[in-house]
Image (cartoon, rainbow, N blue to C red; front, top):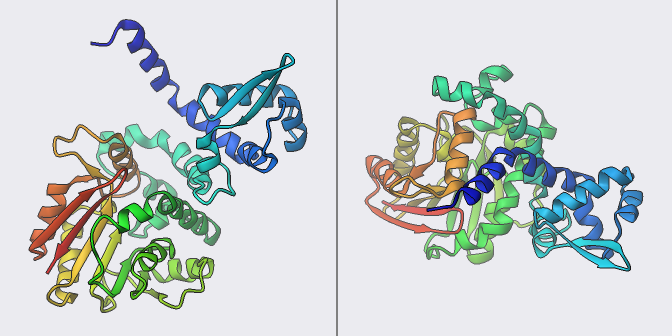
Length: 342
């Protein structure tokens, strides 16, 4: 059993978790981690403040807090503090890193962070709050979080960040080499598709998403890869492209069970024998005691959608109700992968 001292430390950290996030977001926004990565050397707080155009006292407080959070390191030389990035900061917090999470953190800071004030009301009512507050009527998450092309671009970039960290793990969780024609439903950007064709070079991927999403994100595609195409449509109401494999990456958590079964049944009918559906999402443990990441995403879904996080057996039940018989499951560091075969 934890001692009272350990419990109080946990309490303090949880009470001030919102400040911890904002400290990290602020250092990212101001370019602190990028400056260290580019300089490849340690710097004083005064030098950092001058280069980034901030006050000396404010920057020193921010840097000290980042050291406490193990985002920066501090060295003493001739009674002067010299700051530098930790490995974590170089990997994920600097904008120029190949695995940077900057866009996702920026989106969290600008959208998720302020909207958490509606969480208590969402818990009381058991339904999403942000769509009604924003006055939107669109049926998916994009409209709840993105009211302009610029915001939709930021949302797309935020989603891409996860695939830079976890995409290869997700794509290699199962042998998908038998699926050559792939349709990525609700894929938004080409980030997930690029991971797929890099592992399976004989494949083609069609990204099928709402027309306004396709119109915005296809211009952001970072690759001239001819094997990736975009097609606009509503996967509930329009005919989906023919494919050997339909991928639903971080999509089904936005819908209730009835909607999920409706979509999966439609995909089952579109599949040829041997075809399948690949679900990628955060997966709750069967006893629902974790992981924390799945609970956090589930809370966000309560705010924005009618969806939720699910266990692997709950996804199995949805696939079974839709007519899929052969079901496999693999759990990764953040995302689980569920494959249903016809």
